[in-house]
Image (cartoon, rainbow, N blue to C red; front, side, top):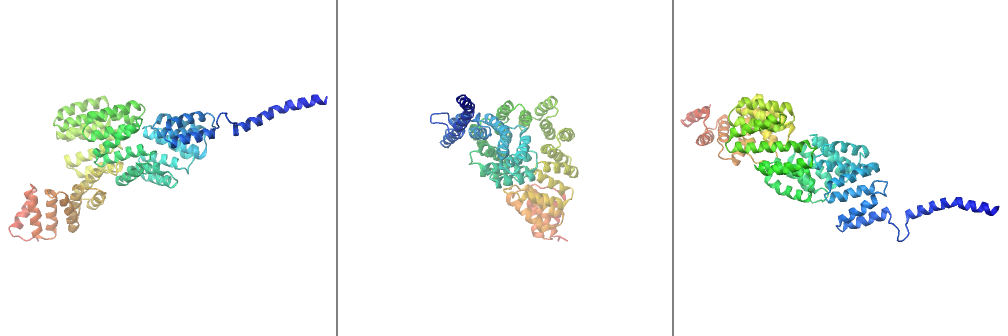
Length: 503
């Protein structure tokens, strides 16, 4: 009987002993058995360090199913991202975010959001918010949210988030986010600096390159942007934002035919990206405006009217049509198109600017133009052309102090080398009877454009205000020789040249 009891007891103990043995095997498998997750990760790290990313991916895929923490999927996403396999990397990050918690979940979602941003996917903003909810203190959630806020036009908030990401160890990815934030804020010099600082880091190179190219285009250096985008597309064929920016660069270089191929690629790769679909229409507008530049205004109007009727909500078509009408000095139909454009898309900076331009330059009503220029500047604060024209309209409306404030922002922009803002700044000081300040600004203008009849005329009037007959004759005489025909200046010039003193 005792023997039977002992056999039963041993039989009951066997499952427990087997379980303990199984657990021991998971922790330290015998030689020749299947490697543990930790061993697979170590092997993958070795392959990655040796540059064999394909082998690292294969190993991590084997390990992913055995890992309940999401760590392997997160590592897999990083390696796939380094290979520019963005779609598969996004799948890995999604898988990691489902399994992981805390900082690991926040990083997976933050990286996912950043890739969605590079792919032009609107859900990147919601994913960024999920990342912050998972780990508010982490670098990657802050990076993702900084980019999201920049995309929403919230530059100041984006800068704060990007700087916090850098402080949390975000490295080059945080620098790229800072570039996006400064761009949204309108500080193109700071944006360029941030993007350039991230260019040499493999994990941020593509996003930084696209951002830098965008800044170069916006600051009139599209020719510098084009080769950068070619490199980005070659390195990462899945980077839809690179194709979109390449199309815009080629339009800026007046090559709409070439731009169409890039725009079509972006639209085909991102069917859900409204911006990519809209870009195709913008290319058609660019082609019509190219015809306009060659003197074929009627052809451009016909093409743009057809495009507008086909896509009534395509703001670019209405802006282009307005430009064609302006070329024919038809201000009223241009204004009608632009008013509809700003009604459809109130935050469209170019539509607001063009409406201000027609009212200011074509209709000669600077006061009516001011609010539209102001909206353009608010939507795109880094655009020096918008600010310059706002300053000119404020001067024309005799709001001289406000004009000086705007124009000083333009002339203080790093790298600004155009005469326009200096001329209008001098005119504003002249209108306020600050003649010496006007002279200082206008001398900057004539240093850039010595044959500007307008700058020389304003210089003449500043010296007239100071009762300096010699310099009045010098600059007013030069303006006259350059073709300046304003009758009041010419009248006073004749009188002073005849010996009449300035009183």
